[in-house]
Each structure stands twice: as C-alpha cells, then as structure tokens.
Amino acid sequence: MSTAAFQPNQLEGFRIGVTSDRRSSDLIDAFERRGARVVHAPTLRIAHSQQDGPLLDDTRVMIAARPDVLLATTGYGVRRWFEVAEADGLGHALTEALADTKILVRGPKARGGIRATGLNDSGMSDSETTASLVTKVLEDFPPGLTIGIQVHGFTDEAQLDRLRAVHKRVLIVAPYRWIAVDDTDERVYKLVEAICARQLDCVTFTSAPSVHALFGAAEGMGMYPQLVAALQTQVVAGAVGPVTAAPLESAGIVPIQPTRFRMGALIRLVCEHLEQNAIVRVDTQNGPLALRGSIVEIGGDRIPLPPTALAIMRALVTARGAVVSREALTLALAAPSDDHAMEVSLSRLRQTLGVPGLVATVVKRGYRLNV
Image (tube, rainbow, N blue to C red; front, side):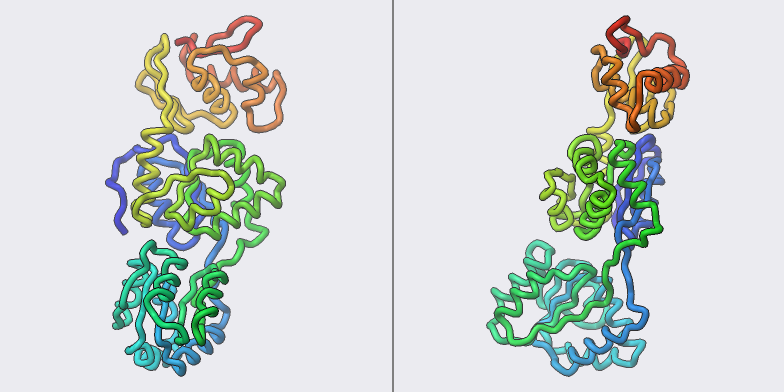
C-alpha cells in the first residue's frame, strides 16, 4: 500500500475515528505513527460463512454454466473465492471454466486478484464502481448472455436488476458479506457519542455500508441529528471514494475524498487537511497560540487538554479575543452543565495552561483570550 510520506508528530493532538474492519490496522498504524490518537470502532465486520457450502454450490453452478462474461468487483473477494474453491478441489475446474470468459473488473485491486489466479481481464470500469461496471457490460456486449458476478460485502440489487433485465442468466457468488457488530460491542456507541461531543477531529470511512451502519447506530441511540450536525461542522468526514461518500452527501455532509480511491491517498488527504484547515492560530499578549486538535501550543510547549477544558478553549480561540459569555461557554460543554460546572472547567483550563492572564475575565460579560 502506498502511504503518505512519513512525518513524525504531524498529527499530534488530533483524534481520528476509524470505522473499517478489514485493513483497519493500515489506517490505525499510519495515523498513530504520525502522532494521532485513534479511536477504532468498526461499524461492520466481514463475515465468512461458518461453512462455505453456499459459496461452493454457487461455484459449481458457475463452472457448469461457463459464463460469457464475469464481473469481478473486489480483489479480496476474488482471492477468497478461488482459495475456497482450491481447498475443495475445484480450483482447476473454476480456472478452466473461466478461460474463455470475458472478465471485466471494477478496479485495479480486482484486476490484481484476477491476474493472481492466472486469468486476464478484458477491461475495467470507467469510475471503479459497480454501477459503471454494469454499464460497461450493457454497452459492450449483446443481450441474452450468461453473466457471472462476484459481489462484495454489500449486494447492490439495483445493479443486479439492470443485468437481469437484459441478459438471459445472472449468476452470483458472494465470498463474504458485511454484518453489523455485536450489540455487546460498545465501541460504535462510544464513537457516536465522541462525534456528537466534538471529541474527534476526523472520522474515516472506507465503505458505504459502514456509513449506513453508523447512521443506524446513531438513530437507535436517538442521536442521529446531533451526529449529522457534528459531521457537517467541526468533525471532518473522510471517505475513500465517491461510492463511500454518497450516503454522507445524502445526509448533507460534505466529506473530503482523494482523487485516487486508495487507502494511501486517503491517509495523505487526512494529514494534509488537518494540518492546513484544523489548526487554529491566534496571536495573544503571551505569544502565538495554536490549537491543534486537543493540544494547545504556546510558548514552545504543547499542552494536552481534557474534553471540558478543550471545549472551553475551542470557544475562546474561535472568538479570537472577542468576549464569550458565560452562557455560551456553558453551552459549549458536551454534557448538560450549569454555570458552576463551567467555572470549575475554566479554572482547570487556566491551571493546565499555566499562562497567567491568557484567559481574561470581563466583569459581568464573560471571558476572552488576551490578544
């Protein structure tokens, strides 16, 4: 995997949520090595059948049918399909049955999976989506054929219906599927709470089903509006490509997404975006101040802040020296709070910063940074 050039401490102070299951270690390692604190909460996980009987049955049907065209959608799915077939003694028969089949791939990873089997593809979709792959079949081949398709974890029935409307037979193999995480796994619920409380700076998504699953969890918690509001404002959503971005955009969220739909490109984009857009700098009477995620940088020191102190500091920094009322600071705290709780948090913020006069009191009005 190609990753962004390594810069130690590039993401120090930033907090990033990772929602993927498969290959999540790649994202987590890349972010943590750059200094970020990562919250891993897979919203879905890949499930393999306890027994691969259905997959083997579908494989035997595919071998007998010798499809005219095969659509390969994911490299992982292709590899697992052939591994299961090989383990059951069907590997040679499957390869031989597909020798004269026109194979179309959704993207480079699916192409790599096909070539690893000793087969070659005849073309790739225009935009690396299942929809564009189906469009290519409908445009490039006559109707009435037998079409095979390796579906990935989330079956797009609309695309299958497009094929069924034109071709004689559509055969499906599903080497794996997505399932929701166990209800006893509290990580997703804690992720929702952290997003709503603005305790994360970015959340990454690598599949559309993972977005839907997070939305579903938030709805079940009664926090969907708060989740969407956070992702529309202070918490950046990072999507690996347009298919993943689609459900976010439908909810009014504008995610960042790389021009190349690859994990390494997503890592690079998150790093660049947070560095360029998520560090707030203010000149104060005590010198330059920068708020980078959960860390305040002032006087050459980087000072980590706990959540309540961070919420107050963020409100003060955003105001850039303007007065912030007591009521506004109280509302900035994530949990329901009163003036006393806010004052305690403000006192702790001043103690943590250790910079006398940086946070000034404006009598009967509120508080401000001493700029």
